[in-house]
Image (cartoon, rainbow, N blue to C red; front, side):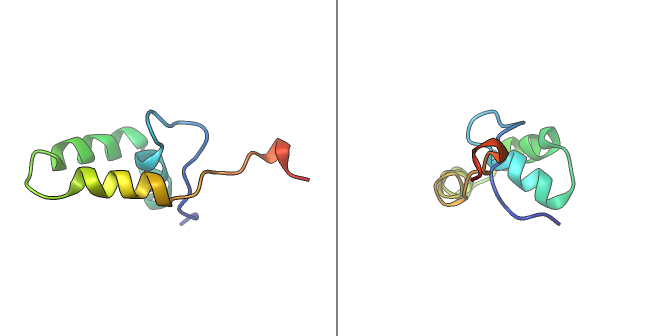
Length: 66
C-alpha cells in the first residue's frame, strides 16, 4: 500500500477518492461510486470527506523538488 496523499493526477474535486483508491488498490471510479452510495445512508460521510480534504497532504510535484 502506498502513502495516503492526495494525488495531482486523477482528482476530480479534492482528490480524496483518488487517494483512497490508490491506497487500497482499486480504481478511483469505484471509490467515487462507493462514496456516493454511502451518502444515501445516514451518517457523517460528507464531513469525513471534507476533513480528509483538509488534513491529507497533497502529493509533491517532482519537478519542484530541490
